[in-house]
Length: 158
Image (cartoon, rainbow, N blue to C red; front, side):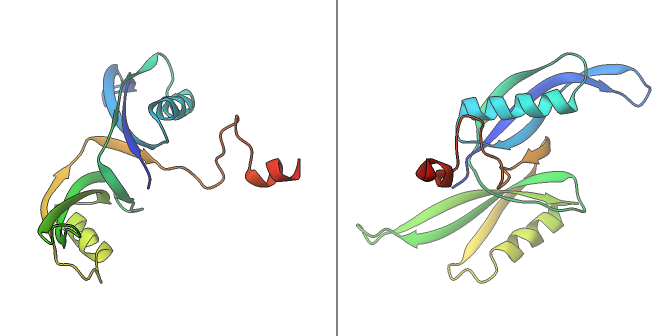
């Protein structure tokens, strides 16, 4: 399961009037630890930001899945609830899971959640959809291997 971290970065951004304005923006990073998240956001920042900038906060999120979209830029956090039976006590247990969905508006975010859960055998509910201030999401790419690690195939050959 992926672990997502919300990284806040303070940097200068050009306003519509051409003046530089200091802003704090949120980015979602798929990482294995706080240290990994900090390393990745610093690599991204070095490429994307000019001038002075800094990471002000890194927090672990409860987001389980991210559903991107090419046509939208707004990210919505969607709470999905469903019930299951507890194996030990045979009592019904409510489970909440959180998704981040990129959509044009709340209705489209809801439709994307419904499409994602289409075919789920357990009835579910979507009690809340909230617009976030996340600017960009950075998942791990399949070919990304940290410089201090080697692929298993290379270790076995050596």
